[in-house]
View 1 (cartoon, rainbow, N blue to C red):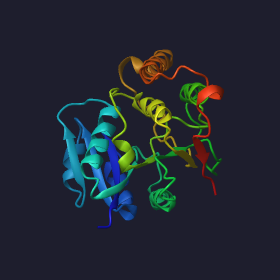
View 2 (cartoon, one colour):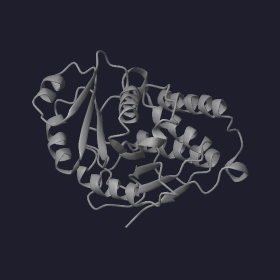
View 3 (cartoon, rainbow, N blue to C red):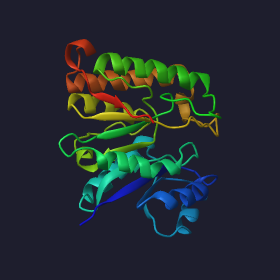
View 4 (cartoon, rainbow, N blue to C red):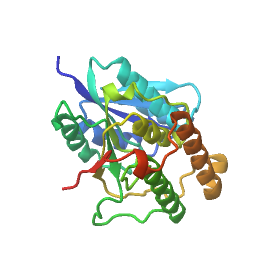
Length: 258
């Protein structure tokens, strides 16, 4: 049986973008899952108007990481149907036209050397007309990416891009406990601990809503950075990763750029 690639979109109060984004995603996706993380606007009603998609609904807002975890769990539970999971945000920042290429890259890899995570990077290549990111977000991304590279032995350029493709069999190895915006940091640590194959690929840098809120205290850049560091500290301690990159973790990241 030919397995499909599942495209998952975490959404929360995305009435401004959800129809437009889904219209484009449907042009390129083999199967679509939307995880509605307790939206209180018109998003649930709008989703009912879209045919050919699967919708999972959280009764209340749990967080970005929780929505991704639900997508992971769904893909693993249906791995007889899906071989690749692609995650794409619903705020218009990611190009659905890239979806076929992501899936192709995952499937063309040799069976004895599969890619576990194909991660988008907004800084791997300069695209014409690229946006300028909010300075606090850029600085935090640079600092966190630098720390992850130094401590985990990766050569990443963007640790926070939400456009990613995963090998479904690899998803079962992740233990997601942080349900907020730091959830991707857990994945980097756990991927390093398990020697997963990570490849970056270039995506355009697009910011349509620079003032979009993280929610509560995380809108404060200092508190947000402290939260990320706390999650990294806890996750690396749990994984027993306390050595520096040169001592224990090498050759785990490739870059794809054409």
